[in-house]
Image (cartoon, rainbow, N blue to C red):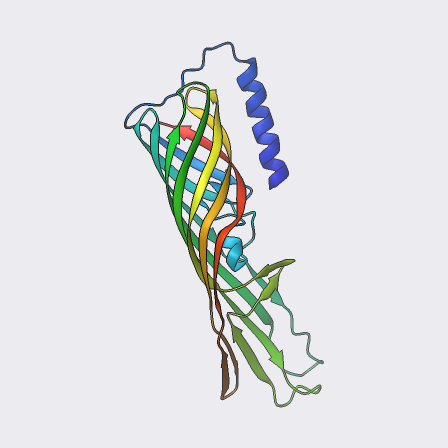
Length: 243
């Protein structure tokens, strides 16, 4: 996905540079844009500083929209979702019962930003601030029992750290405030690409309690909450379409 995105951006840039038209960015009071983010939702604070705080992977495509209050200020909203899952066949002995093991995770992030642009030209540096809220959960079911298949009982663990296709996921809820610094480059009047860096001013993470259930037995393990001040930021790349 990353390689595909880079290839698409490279082709679009080449066409943009080859074009002889003057670039007049479609920016004015009331202008809107659709934002498609790759490489982590850095523009919303939901990349490695946000969703990855609850270990939803950094590379999760995101979608957002911007509304311009005037030529130099905009409000931006965004959404990021991750729903990975994995199934491991039980492979019981011939003629014996078995149940496949399943692992799944869910991650949802929303963010709202206020951005200020330093000029109205083809290259538009900007800065701003944003709030984000991210939540994630996990579920893992495994089969247990004797070798001959008798006494089979399935165990389920909710909100524990799980590994799906090589990525580790955890469960919890995080919210925070971030500072934003970036630049947007217009390829055509209505199409631009941007890159930015987001620095967490503060991040509050409440990890979800873990629950293990097997048969009639259920055990809950309490998880801590962590507050981080001036945490590491996230980088993101975005394609904008204006209308």
